[in-house]
Length: 186
Image (tube, rainbow, N blue to C red):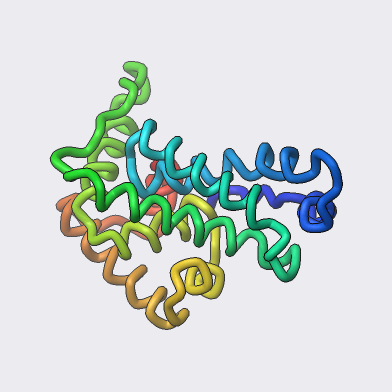
């Protein structure tokens, strides 16, 4: 599973309190998280940058409205998911973007990555979101539920359905450990 690099609660509290420069520092720390989630959902670097920028702008302007520092992660991801969905609605998904070619030694892994990216592009937006948030962001079902504003039970259902769909799309059943290994590289 992806490492969860948390933003320090002190940095969030400083920004909430309106300390000079704190919001800028918080946005700088939040940017990689926002971009990673947006890219996982959109699979387009330019659109992911746009979604992450919009999310960071929202953080910058609305951080004082955040009730607690503990809610920041879910709040951030909810904003990113919303922005990604908004941008995705604006474009027609005609194809899934490729990836940088792998070295000769990594050709099997590269092929698996390409297959997984292609399969992810064929999932419904909600299924893609739960997969990316679970395996890429390392969130649990309760956190994903908060980000997507759906019940935790629905998250677990969509995770199971998304895994099954990916197995069908990849045309071979995968063990859980192999799936997790591949999902981390999305």
